[in-house]
Amino acid sequence: MYSLIFYLGRNTIGIIRETGQIFILLVQAFAWMVLPPYRVKAIIKQMEFVGVKSTFVVVLTGTFTGMVLALQSHHGFKLFGAETLVGSTVALAMTRELGPVLTALMVNGRAGSAMATEIGTMRVTEQIDALYVMAANPINYLIVPRIIAGIIMLPVLTIVSDLLGILGGYFVGVILLNINSGMFVANILEMLEVEDIFHGLIKSIFFGLILSYIGCYKGFYAEGGAEGVGKATTQAVVLSSVLILISDYLLTSIMF
Image (cartoon, rainbow, N blue to C red):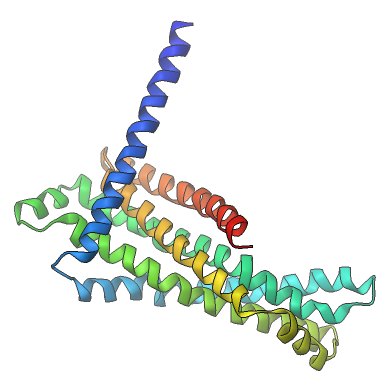
């Protein structure tokens, strides 16, 4: 009985401590976003890393998601003779949910894990301590540019994913399944509203913040050498993915 209470207490204290660390570091990061020095070159470099270098995987994910969605929805709508609704179904699903969520998960696996690994390696090799010695704040130098890059580039990548998902659905629906192209496009224009796209982009901003910040946080507090860096990277990807899905539900319940 004593060991059970000890186990529960220790884990509860650990969760409270880590939650406090997460919020403290987040507040410090937001503070350094408005305080000089402004590291524009570092931000642009991270925007290239998060955005440009993730384009290929986002293109593949968005395109094939739209194609599969069109194929599956056509099978269902065909039972009721409503095949022309495939276009609007693909467009709404991509802009509201699948585009932002799948883009965030893919970028998290590629860029978020890399952030945790890079910063974690700097921590265990004492490079972050060296930044303090050189009077360079590591939060301003390492974390802020990555968070800003995530917030800016995730909406851009989401737009790419949405567009290619709709085009992939058009290819499957019109070219392969012989749905009338005029009705396919007309239903998209009729049912898809600007608010649907806008809400998806708002989600992507939050997802970009989550994946970039959690990756930086786990790396910043990594310990235990190479093994610790590996654990921090794994924890960053898992925690970010879970938070993205949870925040997706919360944002959807608020906006729709």
